Image (tube, rainbow, N blue to C red; front, side, top):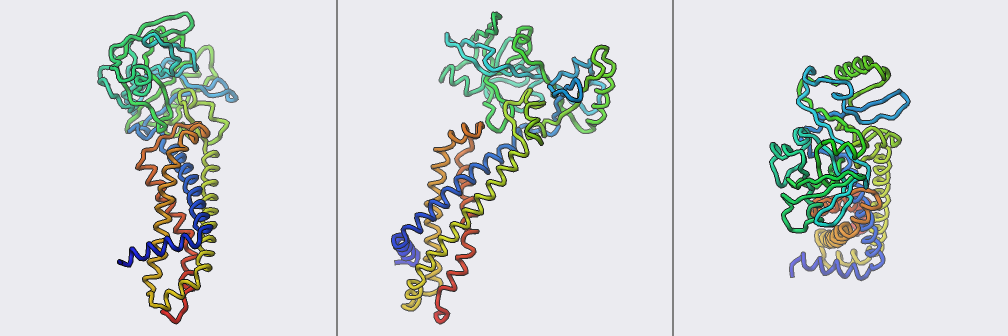
Length: 405
């Protein structure tokens, strides 16, 4: 029998002999790994929000404030201030989009009425944002102002496996009706996007019934000076005959999702963002993560230390009857590896099972891939075991009689 097989057999014997300690260690690592993994993936999801937009750092949105005390709201500066971006160096293009009040729009697909979440856009939308078209050509898909583009998830919900392209849709707001046609499918904006929607539709006279004003997003390039444009906004606002105190400024899209103060979460980014977070909340999540990590490591360390004390006599006997230091160490390593694998599998399965519950509790839509879940849980567990074994490691070698070395 090889040393490895023999060590594994001894490890299982040790587990049976120290059931309470082993069960306590497994539960401790399992709960700690699961909680930390959820918190870490959630925080990572927040900080990496909108990263799939390749030029995220080059995008700005324009916001409006009537007085220094009033709230900021999104605004279309080119219309409100009669702004001509062609005169501003460093601006590549701009797009205007807006969201609607929940439930205002009714959409009838194949005789069934839904209350989807539309996003109203203009023809430059795909030049600024990198939402992936699954069916359709970005260069031409917005040539038809009467067409709508469904997300893959909403299309599947409505049409199942049937191809929705060319299907007619009846839209209704109050007493205003409109018939549109499905012209494309866009990838569903997952939790990695601060903007969510069920389908895209273009600005038309009909869309004015949907509510909220548009917000303008500017795509910039090298040479753009945000301060200079803000000064131009200020000058144009002063020239307004009716609202001389109005203020229009830029807000970086890169910084818009995670706000400094939770009191600011309602404005200005919520004009377009369906999901937001604040730095104070993230700091609290980070603090909780560190506390759980330390408590879990300490509890695991104490449990392993007690197990070493309980097995001190047995280890000494093994050394006296001929076991080498390598043999004793290999046995403890086998125990740790078996426990690691056991907890790793349990934590991954539990993460998958409890993910919908966590999404509901945290009011998020976090959908990490299976490799991401496995990697996160494994790294967290390895960190917990490594920290927790620092004290027991030295106690383990001290527990072996010096004469046997």
